Image 1 (tube, helix red, strand yellow):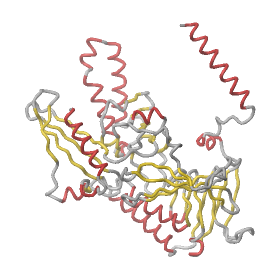
Image 2 (cartoon, helix red, strand yellow):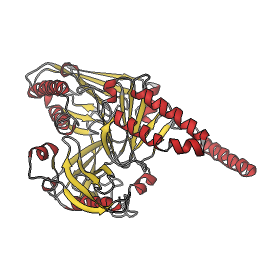
Image 3 (cartoon, one colour):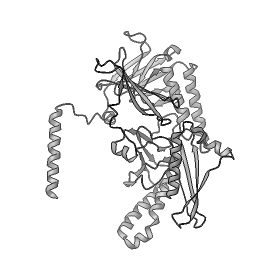
Image 4 (tube, one colour):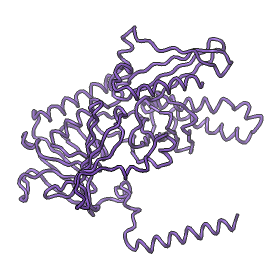
Length: 475
C-alpha cells in the first residue's frame, strides 16, 4: 500500500514544519463531537486486485499520549481493507522496554500501543515479532496475541502439505498462544521500542504496577541509523563556550540541537554548579524560541558513591515546602500519606524546591498519563485517579500537613536542603546503606572493573584473539 505510506509521510513532514499543531491535530474526543471534522480521502492503488481504492487519513491526538495519524484503506472492487497507526510526533530521546506479566482477563484487556519501530516478544515460547512485520497498532494485549495467531494460522494448510515438520512446530506455538488467550497459563509479553513510542497500560494509578516493568535505555548508533536519525560528526567542534580560555572547565557550554516539542533548531546550555555541603552537579537547560518549550535536567558530577542514601523529611509547614531539593535520575520518591510513589528514573534529574517538584509531578500525571480520559477510560480507575490528584493538591497547598517525604537514591546523588547546616536538622534523617546486588546490576556497577584494569583488559583481548584463531581453524 505504497500510496497510503507516501501520503502519511507527507502529512508527518508538514506537521514537523508547522509550529502550531493544534490546527492539524485535534483531540479525538472533539473529533467525535464535531461533525465538520472528517477524514481526508485519497484514491490509491489496491495491492490485492490492482484497481483503485480509497485511503482515509485522520490526524488526531490521543489524550495524554501523542499525535497520531490513523489510516484506513478499503477497496470496493475486491473487498480488501487495511488499517494502521503512525506516530506524527518526534522520536523520544531514549528507547523503552515494557515487560508485563499476563495471568488473568484484566491483564489481557490492557491497552497496548505498538509503533512501527517496536518489536514484540513472548518470553515463555521464545517468540519474537520483528518491527518490520507489523505496522503501528492501538489495541490490547489480547488483540496482539489474536493477530499473531491469525497470521501464523494463515499459511498452515499449505505448510502442512509442503513442510510438515515446520507445520507441527508452528502448530505447537499456535496452541500455546490460544491457551494464553483462554487464561490457562501465565505468560510474559515484552515490547521493545528504540523510538520510545510504544506503551503498555498500567492498571495501578497511584503506585507502581507490580506486573509491569518499564526500562529506558540509550540507543546505539545502529539503532539511530535504523530510525533515520543523524548525529553530526562536528558536534563537539561546534560547541560554544563563554569562558576566557584560562579554565579547564568552561562556565557555560552551548550545544545546538532540535527541540523535542516542535523539532525546530534550539540550544541546550550546560553549567557546572557546586552545591554547599553536598557535591558538584551539572545543570542542563533547553529553551526553544519558536514554540516556547522549556526543559531542565540535573546530573551529578564526580565519582560513584560507595553507599546509597535515604533522606526522610517530615514536612510540617510551608517553610519546609520551600526547601531546595535535588532529585537525581536514579532517585525514588514517595509520600506515604498521599499514596505517592515514584520509581527511579521518573522525571529525570530535577533541581527545584519541594513545592516545585510536587507541582511538576502533578503536571506530569495530569498531562501525560494515558487512558485516563477519553471514550476508552475505565470509570472506576478515573475516580481513583481523581481522588489521588485531589490528595496531592492538598499536600501542595499545605492543607494536609504534616506529611513525610522520602528520597531513596542508591547512588547518593540527591540532596535536600538543611537550613540548620552544619548542625543536624531535627525534622530530617539521613541513612546510608549498602546497595543490593540487584541495585548494582540495574545501575550497571557489577560489570565495572576497577582493580587491575589493564591486566584484565589484556586478558580479555588475549581470550578474544585465541577464540578468533580457534574459530578460523575450525572454518
